Length: 96
Image (cartoon, rainbow, N blue to C red):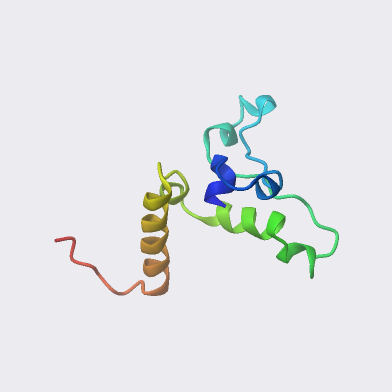
């Protein structure tokens, strides 16, 4: 999703993802975020698990500091930290 949202993914994946920052949305708050549009689905059992729906849904559930990472390596590090803290909320890491 990071590569698709930033235009570095293969074209067959990039065309499935639409960034919320569209020309007609300049006045909306969503224009200043890195969120992507989640298409509606007809079959919730099958359609919700497809990449065009599941990818944007999970991407939009991540915090802003993760999805606004300036590079792929920074994104991976922030995502790893976020997932670690989500899995083990009681562990406090010494920042030394």
